[in-house]
Amino acid sequence: MKMLKHLIQSVDKHPSSIMVVRQQTEQRLPAHQHEKAQLLLVFGGIAYLQTAEKDFYIPSNHYIWIPKNYPHNLMFNTQDLHIINIYFPGRNANKFYHELGIYPVSKLLFEMLAFSEQWQGDYFKGSWEFEFLTTLRNLLPKENLQKFSIQLPTTGDERLQAIVSSLRNRLNENLTLENTATENSMSVRSLTRLFQAKLHITFVQYLKMLRVIRAMELMKDSEMNMTEIAYEIGYSNIAAFSNNFYQLTNMRPSEFKLISGR
Image 1 (cartoon, helix red, strand yellow):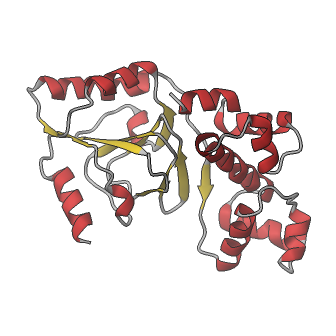
Image 2: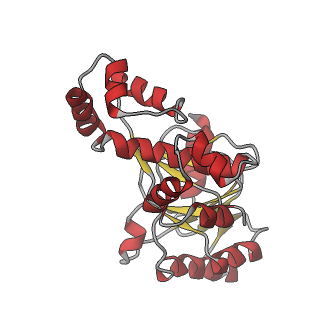
């Protein structure tokens, strides 16, 4: 709790400043929020942002915009992950700044971050660093990038938690709604209703998301080729894997690997 209070106090200590933090601190904190909006950039791995409703997956070379006063918690399990947090004060009429969203880091944004790679701490109005960072923030909605859309709903239902945990550990198997229902002594109708009532998503859609998330991890952390990855996560052919990956991420696996490996 002391760490949490210290971070929030640091972020909101100077309400009008733009604050840059490059230390990996938030993954050790419980759910929290702050008066400033947050631009969180991820490089070198996959980060996981938890909210009360969903878990958001942020791949390497992507960023997430977190509106002000939005409760969240960041986690990751990759040693070489590098995170940049930039906290922005004030209000803005553009709806982009009022919605949580994940987007790829463009070449222009990447160059601006590289230019400011030594910056850390608070920057105040009147300084050229403040103006530069304000320009960086104003750039974000003008790029008109497509949101990265993998958002896993969460549940407090213990029975469903056990089911999805089992699915996560057996993605290379032929997992079906019928088999999963039988294994858990449920009817297909009951399991379908459970997913809809607690997660507001179908069994098949949830399974697709789990498999794509695992594919992203394997692209980053293994030497497997795309065909090997497809088989490892339960697809019998590369075309089905590629099509489902595209449906959820708006890019092909090869495109994602290129972007995430920048």
